[in-house]
Image 1 (spheres, rainbow, N blue to C red):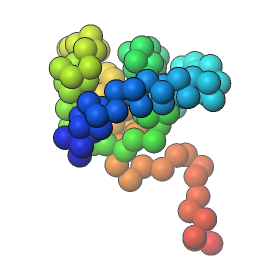
Image 2: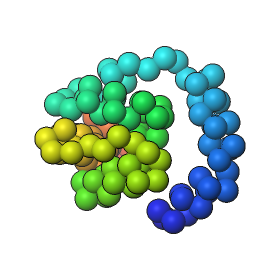
Image 3: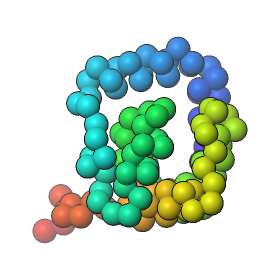
Length: 114
């Protein structure tokens, strides 16, 4: 999957820019409260929205190990400022807790179940 993403970014650099422009044009201005409350909310918001909207975070579902790998990938491939030590642990833990695999949003219900 990571290779596919890297290929798509390389192939469609202009597309990524166009998507960012489209996101900015169609999305309301974001603030930290768009993310679930919890320790690390503001750190995640400010570290991540320096490069992209929270939409990509909110639709992702990764394990803690995968979120950690993505931090390294974003640093190496996209020039993100390295996250280290306690800040990195806080951000990765928050992401895994709120955007981990098979997690549903609080209050969400399955429309296929009674």
